[in-house]
Image 1 (tube, rainbow, N blue to C red):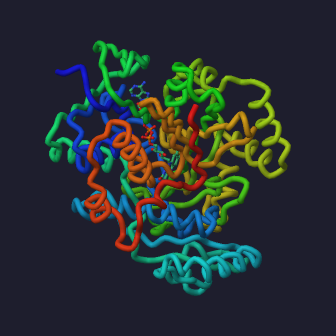
Image 2 (cartoon, rainbow, N blue to C red; image 1 turned 90 degrees about the vertical axis):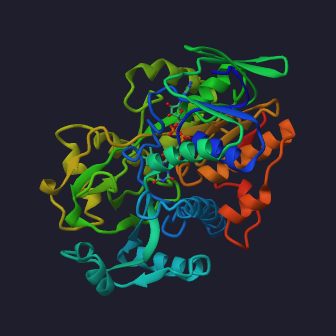
Image 3 (cartoon, rainbow, N blue to C red; image 1 turned 120 degrees about the vertical axis):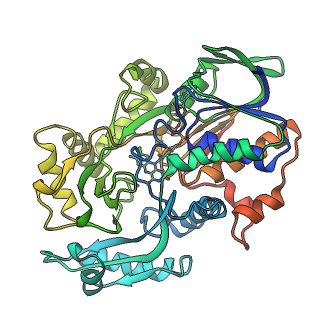
Length: 458
Ligand SMILES: Cc1cc2nc3c(=O)[nH]c(=O)nc-3n(C[C@H](O)[C@H](O)[C@H](O)COP(=O)(O)OP(=O)(O)OC[C@H]3O[C@@H](n4cnc5c(N)ncnc54)[C@H](O)[C@@H]3O)c2cc1C
């Protein structure tokens, strides 16, 4: 087993594995290795149990502006093209009817207006009246007094087993590469140090060296950056998300609700679960948690190390709590985790989707739902709502990837491929990349600006 590589990737979730695949398939890099601390790929947030399994392409996510939706559509399209090219249709990526519902006059008006604008970007979108919905998804209208409308589509790929896709990235990378492509499981990277023009990585299996390092370690990325003296202007606020199960007979479509602008991805949705057969999921909830992994108790200290509480962090918390909507949302979501009362409280919210839902229909989904590493920008004193990257320009990059990080994995990896190719002076077959993964008319340059994306050089 060799101990030196051109590129080392830390983290075997969908971000790290997407990069491994792109490097193997589209560059002439001679050796690349990925290090994952657990025994399998996609053990944490990328695992299908822990996320909402949705390809977020921007058509039913009402928190996106038209401009943001254009960008999300491109990166989501890359994942779809990858999956179809490799024959994963109905294996790892699935078609379901999908829609966003508007309940009551105000939301219906909002949906109608949005439909008029967004159908230019998504020509397949349709507008559904209450009568249409009674046919397509009867439980949405049963027992409902208010009016309801929706926009959506009945025959689009929208559900993804991101864990299986991450594994496929590894398998395909190993198959394709002409060089070395090693995957080290159960190998945690404790520490990274710059030594001359190389990086030294300390692991339980010894020291490894690389010319370039990409840290795709989820909530741990910022901690590793801090240990090297980078990203001091950022803090990590982990937000856990839980789900409730209902029988599959309740819902056959992905049903989203109108988002609150201040709280993107906070409105719950209903989704047929592609892994727990026979079940529909409602959620996710959102709860700030003092740890870096949802189900690993010994990450509390690491949480404080990566939060580094100071005046700027307190100002962000103060501002969040000063807003009525956000305060109410935080409190409500804390209650959703309290055994004994959580079911009844969550039911009220889920009834917006299915009015006839009862407590008997739902159960808290134990050990389902991961954690989103939201980033606080200390300089700007605000919570970043999308992905963030620390590009040190010194041969090491750190990525923090809350939602919709799984959907945009290939777009995010592309940015790193460009940085690596420039730094190491290696070849990157852009034309083939474009032909394989992008839709015809698209240029690659637009992909680099992601929604809510922050990039920093320190
Ligand atoms: C409730 C919820 C719902 C979501 N729904 C969606 C959705 O529907 N669609 C969507 O696109 N996105 C969704 N997301 C977001 C999505 O899950 C993440 O953006 C994505 O999984 C991030 O992938 P990642 O590879 O960056 O991180 P992770 O999947 O967290 O992987 C990081 C990996 O790094 C490893 N690691 C950490 N530290 C080290 C170290 N020191 N050494 C070695 N390995 C290390 C970890 O073990 C882990 O395997 C959701 C997230 C949550 C929490």
